[in-house]
Amino acid sequence: MTERTDVLRAMIEECLEEDIEPYLESIGLPLTERPFRASLEFAETYFQWINEGNEEICKIDDFSDYAASPEFRIIYRHVENWYKGRFGNALVKKNSAIKGVVMIYGVPFVIKMPTTVVRPGKVGEANLYESIWVRIPSSVLDSEDIYSWVVDPPNFLAMKSEVKIDLERDVREIASALRSIRTNFMGAGGEGETLGLQKGTICHLETFVDYIFSQDSTSIQKAYWELQMACETAFKAVSKYKTGKFRETHDLFSLYDDVNAIVPLSISRDILKSLPRWKETTVLRYAVGSRENLKDCFNCYLTTLRILKALVEDARLGGIQGLGSAEFEIGCPPWFGT
Image 1 (cartoon, rainbow, N blue to C red):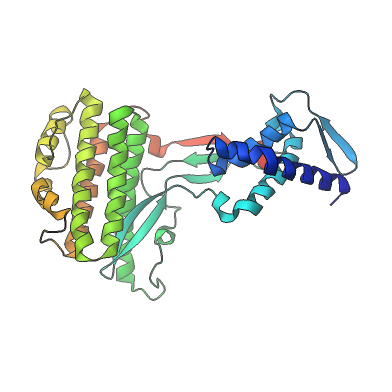
Image 2 (cartoon, one colour):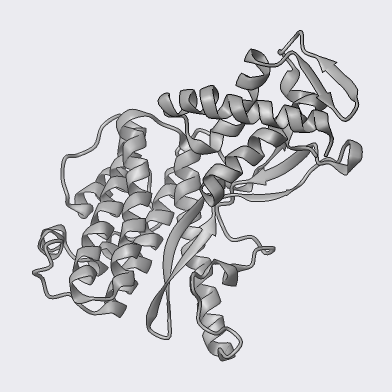
């Protein structure tokens, strides 16, 4: 490492410690956004000449396209190393995932399926990727390894083939339903109350996972309320999107009728009979009911996913149609080059 590089690094670290990081902390900037913002702050405020090795590289006069310049990589590399040294793994942005649950050998296992699938795009100079292709799938792709989604899995090598067949079937159904619900709501857009209802659906489904994973009778009872609310918020979100309003009720049969009158649904109204009535779920949420069977609770989860998947797909909510089958080419941030 050259003397000039040592000087640059020391200068960056001092500015980060004394001024830049305290400022970014004070404005509440998310940690994962700080390295890039700090790099810009340093370049714009503190530094006019970039030197590395024995040669002067660049005099900064115009910052309009500076983030795309090779010189910015020098600053960014030092800044990112400083942040890694301070925050460690907390700096790593976790990939977004949807949480579900599957039964294996009669035991609930959490599954986390990614919300996006990425593949390489164009390769530019120095064999660096200039772009990536991003897809937000509404189903399970053939190229995906669904076994990797199971958190703390059992021994797959010792698993009988018939058990694996059932497991793969269930994971594919659950993942496809959760992705479809999320992607169709995302493609529809919405704001305010509509957006809150859409997000509430996924939130309740993921809270259900936490409850059933506990396996105790109290949590199993509470889990039913989350299924009730997942259905309720989804039906109300569709009604709100289509008509600008929804009925103030917990009764899923009434909410079904309201949506079905606007958009004919492919699922029978009778499927709702497989779930506890809303009045019973209000008792179950206080864990003073009688539904304590783990398998029955999981079956209600599968039924709920089937209902909601059909609901969002039949509703044809508009917005970005076919989002789940589309791919988007996104340019890679140039400052990540080495």
